[in-house]
Picture (tube, rainbow, N blue to C red):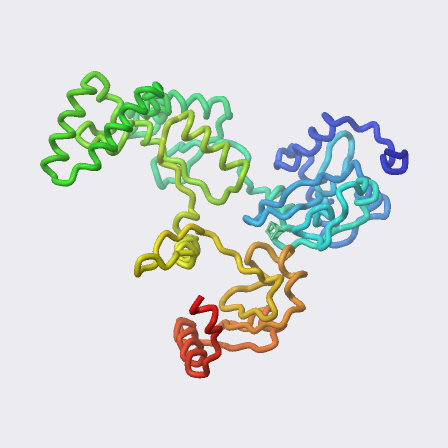
Length: 399
Ligand code: SF4
Protein backbone atom coordinates (compact mmCIF):
# COMPACT_ATOMS: atom_id res chain seq x y z
CA UNK A 1 0.00 0.00 0.00
CA UNK A 2 1.43 3.40 -0.95
CA UNK A 3 1.55 6.33 1.46
CA UNK A 4 -1.15 7.98 -0.62
CA UNK A 5 -3.43 4.92 -0.35
CA UNK A 6 -2.95 4.84 3.41
CA UNK A 7 -4.53 8.27 3.65
CA UNK A 8 -3.74 10.91 6.26
CA UNK A 9 -1.96 9.60 9.33
CA UNK A 10 -3.97 9.57 12.51
CA UNK A 11 -3.02 9.09 16.14
CA UNK A 12 -6.53 7.99 16.97
CA UNK A 13 -6.45 4.42 18.28
CA UNK A 14 -9.04 1.78 17.47
CA UNK A 15 -9.99 1.69 21.14
CA UNK A 16 -10.65 5.44 21.18
CA UNK A 17 -12.59 5.19 17.96
CA UNK A 18 -14.87 2.50 19.37
CA UNK A 19 -15.22 4.47 22.59
CA UNK A 20 -16.45 7.49 20.66
CA UNK A 21 -18.58 5.40 18.36
CA UNK A 22 -20.35 3.94 21.37
CA UNK A 23 -21.87 7.36 21.88
CA UNK A 24 -24.04 6.61 18.89
CA UNK A 25 -25.94 4.25 21.14
CA UNK A 26 -27.48 7.18 22.96
CA UNK A 27 -25.16 7.08 25.94
CA UNK A 28 -24.36 10.79 25.92
CA UNK A 29 -24.24 12.24 29.39
CA UNK A 30 -26.84 14.84 30.21
CA UNK A 31 -24.23 17.63 30.08
CA UNK A 32 -23.21 16.66 26.57
CA UNK A 33 -26.72 16.37 25.21
CA UNK A 34 -27.12 20.11 24.65
CA UNK A 35 -23.91 20.27 22.65
CA UNK A 36 -24.88 17.17 20.64
CA UNK A 37 -28.43 18.25 19.81
CA UNK A 38 -27.27 21.72 18.83
CA UNK A 39 -24.64 20.25 16.51
CA UNK A 40 -27.08 17.78 14.96
CA UNK A 41 -29.66 20.53 14.48
CA UNK A 42 -27.15 22.77 12.74
CA UNK A 43 -25.83 19.88 10.62
CA UNK A 44 -29.36 19.04 9.46
CA UNK A 45 -30.00 22.69 8.67
CA UNK A 46 -26.71 22.98 6.72
CA UNK A 47 -25.43 25.58 9.20
CA UNK A 48 -22.12 24.01 10.21
CA UNK A 49 -19.08 26.25 10.21
CA UNK A 50 -16.33 25.47 7.62
CA UNK A 51 -14.13 24.12 10.45
CA UNK A 52 -16.89 21.76 11.56
CA UNK A 53 -17.51 20.61 8.02
CA UNK A 54 -13.79 19.99 7.62
CA UNK A 55 -13.85 17.72 10.68
CA UNK A 56 -16.71 15.72 9.16
CA UNK A 57 -14.66 15.14 6.00
CA UNK A 58 -11.79 13.35 7.74
CA UNK A 59 -11.61 9.61 7.13
CA UNK A 60 -11.00 8.89 10.81
CA UNK A 61 -14.26 10.62 11.67
CA UNK A 62 -16.36 8.29 9.52
CA UNK A 63 -18.00 5.17 10.90
CA UNK A 64 -19.06 2.77 8.13
CA UNK A 65 -21.96 0.73 9.40
CA UNK A 66 -25.49 -0.46 8.60
CA UNK A 67 -28.79 1.43 8.84
CA UNK A 68 -31.39 -0.46 10.84
CA UNK A 69 -34.13 2.12 10.52
CA UNK A 70 -35.88 -0.52 8.39
CA UNK A 71 -35.28 -4.13 7.36
CA UNK A 72 -33.34 -3.26 4.23
CA UNK A 73 -30.07 -2.71 6.04
CA UNK A 74 -28.48 -0.16 3.71
CA UNK A 75 -24.79 0.59 4.13
CA UNK A 76 -24.28 3.96 5.77
CA UNK A 77 -21.46 6.26 6.78
CA UNK A 78 -21.91 8.10 10.04
CA UNK A 79 -19.97 11.34 10.30
CA UNK A 80 -18.66 11.93 13.78
CA UNK A 81 -17.79 15.26 15.27
CA UNK A 82 -15.33 15.17 18.15
CA UNK A 83 -14.73 17.56 20.98
CA UNK A 84 -12.77 17.13 24.21
CA UNK A 85 -12.49 13.37 23.79
CA UNK A 86 -16.21 12.96 23.12
CA UNK A 87 -17.96 12.36 19.82
CA UNK A 88 -21.38 12.99 18.37
CA UNK A 89 -22.88 11.68 15.13
CA UNK A 90 -23.65 14.79 13.11
CA UNK A 91 -24.76 13.39 9.75
CA UNK A 92 -25.66 10.06 8.13
CA UNK A 93 -25.15 9.41 4.42
CA UNK A 94 -24.89 6.35 2.18
CA UNK A 95 -21.76 4.23 2.34
CA UNK A 96 -20.18 4.50 -1.14
CA UNK A 97 -18.60 1.03 -0.82
CA UNK A 98 -22.06 -0.53 -0.48
CA UNK A 99 -23.84 -1.83 -3.61
CA UNK A 100 -27.22 -1.17 -2.02
CA UNK A 101 -26.80 2.56 -2.02
CA UNK A 102 -24.34 3.36 -4.79
CA UNK A 103 -24.67 1.90 -8.25
CA UNK A 104 -22.00 1.01 -9.21
CA UNK A 105 -20.35 1.09 -5.80
CA UNK A 106 -16.76 2.16 -5.15
CA UNK A 107 -14.14 -0.55 -5.64
CA UNK A 108 -13.33 -2.03 -2.23
CA UNK A 109 -9.66 -1.15 -2.64
CA UNK A 110 -10.52 2.57 -2.63
CA UNK A 111 -8.83 4.14 0.38
CA UNK A 112 -11.06 5.59 3.13
CA UNK A 113 -9.32 8.94 2.59
CA UNK A 114 -10.64 8.96 -0.96
CA UNK A 115 -14.07 7.52 -0.10
CA UNK A 116 -14.67 10.21 2.48
CA UNK A 117 -15.49 12.67 -0.28
CA UNK A 118 -18.21 10.50 -1.80
CA UNK A 119 -21.63 10.37 -0.18
CA UNK A 120 -24.18 7.92 -1.51
CA UNK A 121 -27.90 8.61 -1.18
CA UNK A 122 -30.10 7.08 1.49
CA UNK A 123 -33.74 7.64 2.23
CA UNK A 124 -35.02 10.27 4.70
CA UNK A 125 -35.89 7.60 7.22
CA UNK A 126 -32.28 6.44 7.19
CA UNK A 127 -31.07 10.00 7.68
CA UNK A 128 -33.40 10.40 10.62
CA UNK A 129 -31.35 7.74 12.42
CA UNK A 130 -29.76 10.69 14.22
CA UNK A 131 -33.09 11.58 15.74
CA UNK A 132 -33.53 7.99 16.87
CA UNK A 133 -30.06 7.93 18.44
CA UNK A 134 -30.44 11.24 20.25
CA UNK A 135 -34.16 11.26 20.98
CA UNK A 136 -34.39 12.65 24.53
CA UNK A 137 -37.21 10.18 25.18
CA UNK A 138 -35.19 7.20 23.97
CA UNK A 139 -35.16 4.51 26.63
CA UNK A 140 -31.56 3.70 27.45
CA UNK A 141 -32.12 2.16 30.87
CA UNK A 142 -34.04 -0.81 32.13
CA UNK A 143 -37.47 0.24 33.38
CA UNK A 144 -39.19 -1.84 36.03
CA UNK A 145 -42.85 -1.55 36.89
CA UNK A 146 -43.25 0.42 40.14
CA UNK A 147 -47.05 0.50 40.41
CA UNK A 148 -50.02 -1.67 39.60
CA UNK A 149 -50.34 -2.78 36.01
CA UNK A 150 -51.77 0.10 33.99
CA UNK A 151 -50.77 2.78 36.52
CA UNK A 152 -47.80 3.72 34.31
CA UNK A 153 -45.38 4.01 37.21
CA UNK A 154 -41.80 2.97 36.56
CA UNK A 155 -38.39 2.98 38.17
CA UNK A 156 -35.06 2.63 36.41
CA UNK A 157 -32.82 -0.17 37.60
CA UNK A 158 -29.30 -1.20 36.67
CA UNK A 159 -28.62 -3.83 34.01
CA UNK A 160 -27.03 -6.04 36.68
CA UNK A 161 -30.20 -5.94 38.78
CA UNK A 162 -32.36 -6.57 35.70
CA UNK A 163 -30.35 -9.64 34.70
CA UNK A 164 -30.40 -10.96 38.25
CA UNK A 165 -34.20 -10.58 38.53
CA UNK A 166 -34.89 -12.01 35.07
CA UNK A 167 -32.72 -15.05 35.74
CA UNK A 168 -33.51 -15.71 39.39
CA UNK A 169 -37.02 -14.29 39.83
CA UNK A 170 -38.27 -13.79 43.40
CA UNK A 171 -40.60 -11.37 45.20
CA UNK A 172 -39.90 -8.75 42.61
CA UNK A 173 -42.93 -6.54 43.24
CA UNK A 174 -43.21 -6.84 47.01
CA UNK A 175 -43.61 -3.06 47.44
CA UNK A 176 -46.70 -2.94 45.25
CA UNK A 177 -50.01 -3.36 47.12
CA UNK A 178 -51.53 -6.74 46.31
CA UNK A 179 -48.26 -8.25 45.09
CA UNK A 180 -46.42 -8.41 48.43
CA UNK A 181 -46.12 -12.18 48.41
CA UNK A 182 -46.25 -12.89 44.67
CA UNK A 183 -43.31 -14.97 43.58
CA UNK A 184 -42.20 -14.38 40.01
CA UNK A 185 -40.47 -17.27 38.28
CA UNK A 186 -37.10 -16.53 36.74
CA UNK A 187 -35.56 -18.15 33.68
CA UNK A 188 -33.78 -20.63 35.91
CA UNK A 189 -37.18 -21.91 37.11
CA UNK A 190 -38.46 -22.25 33.54
CA UNK A 191 -35.46 -23.55 31.64
CA UNK A 192 -35.05 -26.61 33.83
CA UNK A 193 -34.51 -29.40 31.33
CA UNK A 194 -30.82 -29.18 30.47
CA UNK A 195 -29.90 -32.75 29.65
CA UNK A 196 -29.63 -32.93 25.84
CA UNK A 197 -29.87 -36.72 25.88
CA UNK A 198 -33.15 -36.66 27.84
CA UNK A 199 -34.38 -33.87 25.55
CA UNK A 200 -33.80 -36.06 22.52
CA UNK A 201 -35.27 -39.23 23.98
CA UNK A 202 -38.44 -37.44 25.07
CA UNK A 203 -38.78 -35.68 21.72
CA UNK A 204 -38.48 -39.02 19.94
CA UNK A 205 -41.22 -40.63 22.05
CA UNK A 206 -43.48 -37.57 21.81
CA UNK A 207 -43.22 -37.73 18.03
CA UNK A 208 -44.33 -41.33 18.27
CA UNK A 209 -47.45 -40.29 20.27
CA UNK A 210 -48.39 -37.81 17.56
CA UNK A 211 -48.42 -40.60 15.00
CA UNK A 212 -51.20 -42.49 16.79
CA UNK A 213 -54.43 -42.29 14.85
CA UNK A 214 -57.32 -42.61 17.32
CA UNK A 215 -57.92 -40.78 20.65
CA UNK A 216 -57.77 -44.14 22.43
CA UNK A 217 -54.38 -44.99 20.94
CA UNK A 218 -53.06 -41.53 21.82
CA UNK A 219 -54.31 -41.81 25.41
CA UNK A 220 -52.64 -45.21 25.84
CA UNK A 221 -49.40 -43.88 24.34
CA UNK A 222 -49.45 -40.92 26.77
CA UNK A 223 -49.89 -43.32 29.72
CA UNK A 224 -46.93 -45.40 28.49
CA UNK A 225 -44.89 -42.21 28.15
CA UNK A 226 -45.74 -41.16 31.71
CA UNK A 227 -44.70 -44.55 33.05
CA UNK A 228 -41.44 -44.48 31.11
CA UNK A 229 -40.52 -40.98 32.29
CA UNK A 230 -42.14 -41.12 35.76
CA UNK A 231 -39.10 -39.49 37.39
CA UNK A 232 -38.85 -36.68 34.85
CA UNK A 233 -42.43 -35.50 34.44
CA UNK A 234 -41.74 -32.34 36.47
CA UNK A 235 -39.80 -31.07 33.44
CA UNK A 236 -42.95 -30.98 31.35
CA UNK A 237 -45.48 -28.17 31.02
CA UNK A 238 -48.30 -30.70 31.33
CA UNK A 239 -47.54 -34.44 31.71
CA UNK A 240 -50.97 -35.24 30.24
CA UNK A 241 -49.93 -33.29 27.12
CA UNK A 242 -46.29 -34.23 26.53
CA UNK A 243 -46.63 -32.60 23.10
CA UNK A 244 -46.42 -29.17 24.82
CA UNK A 245 -42.83 -30.14 25.55
CA UNK A 246 -40.64 -29.17 28.51
CA UNK A 247 -41.23 -26.12 30.67
CA UNK A 248 -38.41 -24.50 28.72
CA UNK A 249 -41.04 -23.87 26.03
CA UNK A 250 -42.70 -21.39 28.40
CA UNK A 251 -39.96 -18.98 27.45
CA UNK A 252 -41.30 -17.18 24.39
CA UNK A 253 -38.96 -15.20 22.20
CA UNK A 254 -40.62 -12.80 19.75
CA UNK A 255 -38.68 -10.48 17.53
CA UNK A 256 -39.44 -7.93 14.88
CA UNK A 257 -37.10 -8.20 11.95
CA UNK A 258 -33.72 -9.75 11.90
CA UNK A 259 -31.47 -11.21 9.29
CA UNK A 260 -28.45 -13.44 9.02
CA UNK A 261 -25.98 -13.01 11.85
CA UNK A 262 -28.44 -11.94 14.48
CA UNK A 263 -30.81 -14.83 13.72
CA UNK A 264 -28.08 -17.46 14.20
CA UNK A 265 -27.14 -15.84 17.49
CA UNK A 266 -30.68 -15.86 18.85
CA UNK A 267 -31.34 -19.41 17.61
CA UNK A 268 -28.26 -20.52 19.47
CA UNK A 269 -29.17 -18.64 22.64
CA UNK A 270 -32.92 -19.25 22.87
CA UNK A 271 -32.98 -22.63 21.12
CA UNK A 272 -29.64 -24.28 21.80
CA UNK A 273 -29.01 -22.81 25.26
CA UNK A 274 -32.41 -22.09 26.79
CA UNK A 275 -34.11 -24.97 25.02
CA UNK A 276 -37.33 -23.28 23.91
CA UNK A 277 -39.00 -24.01 20.63
CA UNK A 278 -41.20 -20.92 20.99
CA UNK A 279 -39.32 -18.51 18.76
CA UNK A 280 -41.55 -16.45 16.51
CA UNK A 281 -40.78 -13.52 14.27
CA UNK A 282 -43.52 -11.18 13.11
CA UNK A 283 -42.63 -12.10 9.52
CA UNK A 284 -44.33 -15.41 10.16
CA UNK A 285 -47.62 -13.57 9.95
CA UNK A 286 -47.28 -10.50 7.79
CA UNK A 287 -45.10 -11.92 5.04
CA UNK A 288 -46.81 -15.30 5.01
CA UNK A 289 -48.81 -14.44 1.90
CA UNK A 290 -45.60 -13.79 -0.04
CA UNK A 291 -43.97 -17.00 1.15
CA UNK A 292 -46.93 -19.26 0.50
CA UNK A 293 -47.85 -17.76 -2.85
CA UNK A 294 -44.15 -18.17 -3.78
CA UNK A 295 -44.30 -21.79 -2.73
CA UNK A 296 -47.46 -22.34 -4.77
CA UNK A 297 -45.79 -20.74 -7.81
CA UNK A 298 -42.95 -23.23 -7.64
CA UNK A 299 -45.18 -26.31 -7.45
CA UNK A 300 -44.68 -28.85 -10.22
CA UNK A 301 -47.40 -30.62 -12.18
CA UNK A 302 -46.97 -34.23 -11.10
CA UNK A 303 -49.40 -37.14 -11.44
CA UNK A 304 -52.34 -34.96 -12.37
CA UNK A 305 -51.86 -32.30 -9.70
CA UNK A 306 -49.59 -29.41 -8.69
CA UNK A 307 -47.43 -30.17 -5.64
CA UNK A 308 -44.00 -30.04 -3.95
CA UNK A 309 -43.40 -26.29 -4.16
CA UNK A 310 -39.81 -25.71 -3.12
CA UNK A 311 -39.15 -22.01 -3.34
CA UNK A 312 -40.75 -19.80 -0.72
CA UNK A 313 -39.24 -16.48 -1.51
CA UNK A 314 -39.47 -14.91 -4.94
CA UNK A 315 -38.17 -11.58 -6.01
CA UNK A 316 -38.96 -10.31 -9.49
CA UNK A 317 -36.06 -9.37 -11.75
CA UNK A 318 -37.14 -5.73 -11.88
CA UNK A 319 -33.76 -4.58 -13.08
CA UNK A 320 -33.98 -6.80 -16.19
CA UNK A 321 -37.65 -5.96 -16.87
CA UNK A 322 -38.78 -4.02 -19.94
CA UNK A 323 -42.00 -2.87 -18.32
CA UNK A 324 -43.14 -2.87 -14.69
CA UNK A 325 -46.67 -2.68 -13.32
CA UNK A 326 -46.60 -1.47 -9.71
CA UNK A 327 -49.84 -2.42 -7.95
CA UNK A 328 -50.02 -0.82 -4.53
CA UNK A 329 -46.23 -1.01 -4.25
CA UNK A 330 -44.22 2.15 -3.98
CA UNK A 331 -40.69 2.23 -5.20
CA UNK A 332 -39.97 5.62 -3.67
CA UNK A 333 -41.28 4.91 -0.19
CA UNK A 334 -40.69 1.24 0.52
CA UNK A 335 -40.10 -2.17 -1.08
CA UNK A 336 -36.73 -3.12 0.23
CA UNK A 337 -35.25 0.25 0.26
CA UNK A 338 -35.53 3.30 -1.94
CA UNK A 339 -31.72 3.70 -1.93
CA UNK A 340 -31.30 0.29 -3.56
CA UNK A 341 -34.08 0.15 -6.12
CA UNK A 342 -34.98 3.68 -7.03
CA UNK A 343 -31.79 4.53 -8.98
CA UNK A 344 -32.00 1.21 -10.87
CA UNK A 345 -35.68 1.36 -11.77
CA UNK A 346 -36.93 4.92 -11.86
CA UNK A 347 -35.94 5.45 -15.51
CA UNK A 348 -37.78 2.31 -16.69
CA UNK A 349 -41.17 2.33 -18.35
CA UNK A 350 -43.75 1.57 -15.67
CA UNK A 351 -47.40 2.01 -14.78
CA UNK A 352 -48.83 2.49 -11.30
CA UNK A 353 -52.12 1.12 -10.01
CA UNK A 354 -52.94 2.77 -6.71
CA UNK A 355 -55.97 4.54 -5.23
CA UNK A 356 -53.59 7.24 -4.04
CA UNK A 357 -51.65 9.46 -6.41
CA UNK A 358 -48.28 8.55 -4.92
CA UNK A 359 -44.88 10.03 -5.62
CA UNK A 360 -44.23 7.00 -7.82
CA UNK A 361 -47.47 7.62 -9.73
CA UNK A 362 -46.17 11.10 -10.53
CA UNK A 363 -43.23 9.50 -12.38
CA UNK A 364 -45.25 6.78 -14.13
CA UNK A 365 -45.92 6.32 -17.83
CA UNK A 366 -49.58 5.62 -16.94
CA UNK A 367 -51.42 5.95 -13.64
CA UNK A 368 -54.60 3.98 -12.96
CA UNK A 369 -56.48 5.10 -9.82
CA UNK A 370 -58.47 2.00 -8.85
CA UNK A 371 -60.89 2.17 -5.98
CA UNK A 372 -59.69 0.50 -2.77
CA UNK A 373 -60.49 -3.24 -2.91
CA UNK A 374 -60.92 -3.31 -6.69
CA UNK A 375 -57.44 -4.44 -7.65
CA UNK A 376 -58.68 -8.06 -7.75
CA UNK A 377 -61.30 -7.06 -10.33
CA UNK A 378 -58.62 -5.30 -12.33
CA UNK A 379 -56.46 -8.46 -12.32
CA UNK A 380 -59.41 -10.61 -13.47
CA UNK A 381 -60.20 -8.09 -16.22
CA UNK A 382 -56.60 -8.20 -17.41
CA UNK A 383 -56.67 -12.01 -17.44
CA UNK A 384 -59.88 -12.03 -19.45
CA UNK A 385 -58.46 -9.56 -21.97
CA UNK A 386 -55.23 -11.58 -22.32
CA UNK A 387 -57.18 -14.80 -22.97
CA UNK A 388 -59.66 -13.16 -25.35
CA UNK A 389 -56.95 -11.54 -27.45
CA UNK A 390 -54.58 -14.52 -27.20
CA UNK A 391 -51.84 -12.31 -25.77
CA UNK A 392 -50.25 -15.17 -23.82
CA UNK A 393 -47.15 -17.20 -24.60
CA UNK A 394 -48.77 -20.41 -25.74
CA UNK A 395 -45.59 -22.41 -26.25
CA UNK A 396 -44.50 -21.54 -22.67
CA UNK A 397 -47.83 -22.63 -21.16
CA UNK A 398 -47.83 -25.91 -23.09
CA UNK A 399 -44.17 -26.40 -22.02
S1 SF4 B 1 -34.18 2.03 3.09
FE1 SF4 B 1 -33.80 3.89 4.31
S2 SF4 B 1 -34.44 3.34 6.41
FE2 SF4 B 1 -34.22 1.43 5.25
S3 SF4 B 1 -32.15 0.72 5.72
FE3 SF4 B 1 -32.06 1.93 3.81
S4 SF4 B 1 -31.56 4.02 4.46
FE4 SF4 B 1 -32.24 2.91 6.27
